[in-house]
Image (cartoon, rainbow, N blue to C red):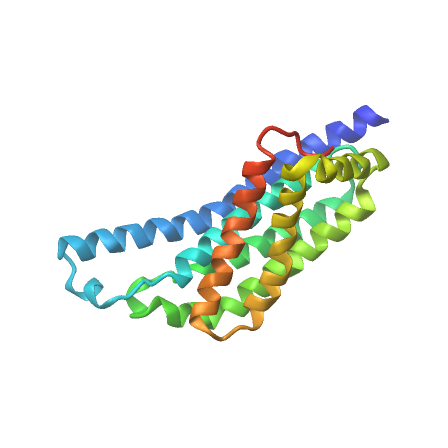
Amino acid sequence: MQETTISGFQFLLETFVLLMGLAMAEVLRGFARVLKLRARQKAGVDPASEAITIGWLVPLMGLVVILDQSTFFLHMYSFRETLLFNGGTVIGILLTIGWYYLIASLVFPDKPADWRDFDAWYWQQKRWIMGGVIGINAISTIAGVLLATPEQLEATREAQQAGIAGALAGLAAFAAIPAMFWLFFSKSKRVNIALLLVLVASPVIYGALTIGSEFPG
């Protein structure tokens, strides 16, 4: 029975990786468009592009989304022994990754030339993106509680209590939660930049502090 469950998860994981790759590629494609735009501006070969201001908000949001996608992948891996292979699971994964893809498609404008100031695009899309990120993280957290085995929960507690590094890693992960909600409501550009930096730093710090540990599961 256990072998069938793991085999089913391996099939789900392959599907998940494919769909998640498309969502992450959407963000990376946005970064590529920005880099090409900056190259044209510096080279002076496209006078129309020189009037476009990229700013910090949109690129930082792109980093937040792609790092959050990476974190979600870790949570998906932790379910490998408990996730059942059935129609409900397949539909749930498709809906979740589809949700991620929609979020990713909103980070960068499809036609940069239509937006002279990327900040204007950011303020128009921010709540859709952050609302989606908050929703997916809530689903992931609930699923983690419901599907985690006692051994996984115990391993997580031991990791968090194992010295200063474990405690700091847990604090870094927890810091992202209030930052997401604050970012959702904040209308200050400076506050938004600061919160985006927190959301970028949180998974990076968590990864650095747990680099020598295996994810619980």
